[in-house]
Amino acid sequence: MPLDNIKGQIEMLSPEEVSELQAWLNQQEQEEATVDRQLKAAVDAGKFDKLIEQAMADEKAGLTTPL
Image (cartoon, rainbow, N blue to C red):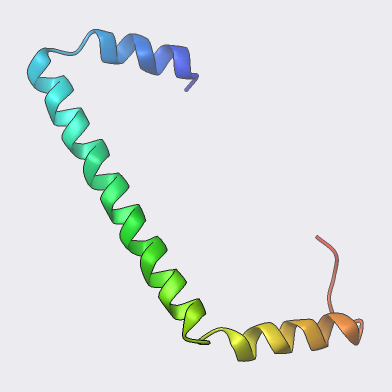
């Protein structure tokens, strides 16, 4: 759905529905931030190091396919 259509639909919402939408969007943003923090912590802790090393070795050995 084009953004202009979404904006038009939002403009037709009641004040209560706008508040509900804002709360939902805030919740989505908080959940995304939580996932970002968890991923950063995992990367910082080295949890992906072996996978990265293996992927780099596979690429160097010609075992990968370009996307």
